Image 1 (cartoon, rainbow, N blue to C red):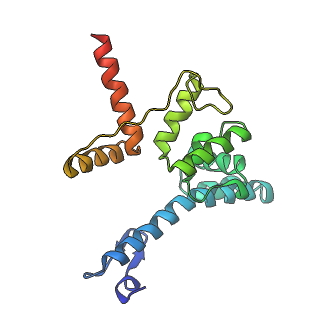
Image 2 (image 1 turned 180 degrees about the horizontal axis):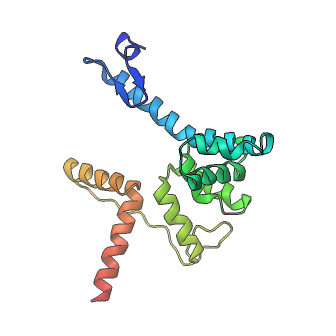
Image 3 (image 1 turned 90 degrees about the vertical axis):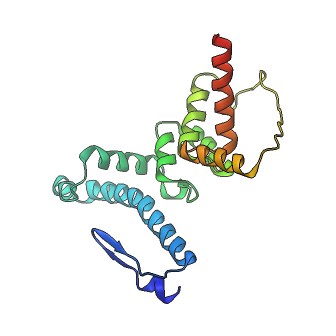
Length: 193
């Protein structure tokens, strides 16, 4: 790590970054912040589980001292209980796991595998699970006899590709998923007429 990133100072209410920091150092710090933020939900969940079993008489007071919303803390503990540390996917966020926490374990594993392998955002995963619950393809073990594989190739300008990629990112989807949702929306609008 360079001297510039070593001079970054974290305080409770601020992150002070030195001027002249390299892009690599700035990105490294951002990644460290993301990891800490995403990990904290797991850490709090595990802390709560431990506290409830080890200190039942002091648990409620400890929860109050965190100053976090009680329901938020309950959710952290619930998700942490539903996924033992060995089943948690480091390549997926706590929120990915939270989306699947209510499912049976075998379905959780199916969706975690897909989301991890295909690099799905949390929102895209939510949409795929919702579609499966409505009887569409992607359900574990489902036979998708109504679908076909189709490859569409489109030559577009670099600017248009960047705009589409940005729109997909803003929608928290990958480009392919975003394009499919836009095509579905357009088809529904035309067919409604």
